[in-house]
View 1: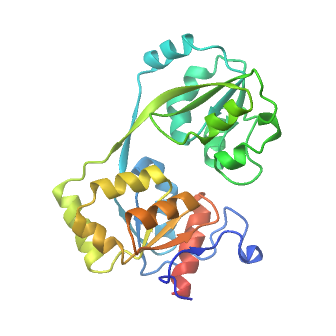
View 2: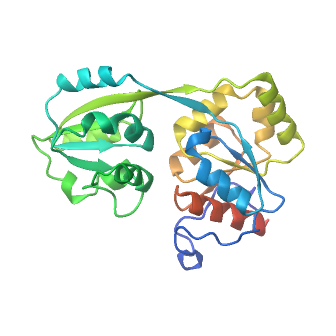
Length: 280
């Protein structure tokens, strides 16, 4: 199969061939393969460790930094809002920087995806609303608890920007929706040495795949990469767990091959990389 012929979707195709989530299909399946990881290092440790354990080489180039907002500022914001019936966390960053401030509310907690749910539960809280499948706003909005929300107060905990679909749909269903922004995402500022290392690795063909977990990550990556490095990036294959990322990649990096992974969990991403690498 020619992975460079354009976008290839692995999600949903041949489901029976995939091992259960959490299982890596091969401990040597990435031998000789270089993978560029674009999330901040503290958020990509499991993915990086899995790539290395499978024999691959990790090139870490974070596209952005996460800066949490002052907790006192967040709490002042909360006092000006009506007490929520439902609090929605849209990411692990939202949990890390906002969960402590909203624990006092007697509200149902919703999580957009499994990683966000895990972060909440790891802090001792119960997640009441989460998608049975999928890991985005569209899937969360299908949950029964979010259908009849007329007159209910919904608080969405997120960064300084993001998709509006969740809030817009809940408002259409009659909910009163407020945002609480608990962190900012700022483009990473690479050093000249980091840029030189990246361009060298790309130019020498040592980076076979680049993993991008969100549209915001991709936008920051394109913003901070020099034009020469961005041009060289087209020689790699971009692997992402969301169709919106692939669509954005085709717009921002025309010509780059893209592959849709079945999910954002580290084992799932690693298994996708292994299958691509072994298929050639």
